[in-house]
Image (cartoon, rainbow, N blue to C red; front, side):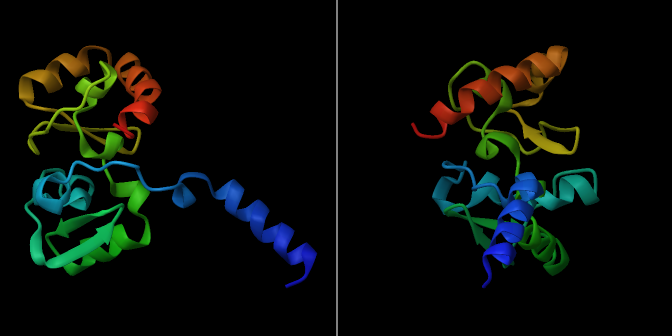
Length: 148
């Protein structure tokens, strides 16, 4: 490959941003299954959590992700950062306070195209009081949390 072509490809990868980002260092995957087996794509396509099925699985970031359909599995496989929940699928409220907590698939929200999960519905309501501050705090804490 020519040096010019190599430079062009490197620039394209850098400009592409999150689609080529590294997967999270840690994923909420009890028993090896991410986010309790809930289909992360369904939050975007169906507007609700949908249980994934064993036959529609995909490995990513050290966990097995399950999907309600082959189409959802293929969407995720093509662009996992678009569909994977923030903070490895751990509670966004807890991440903002610098600890990890499990989530309830019913306690969710999509903000600016990103899926956020919370421990339960009451925590989700607390988190929703100041979403920009919660996200800023969790973003600041996540690099350290993801390595614990």
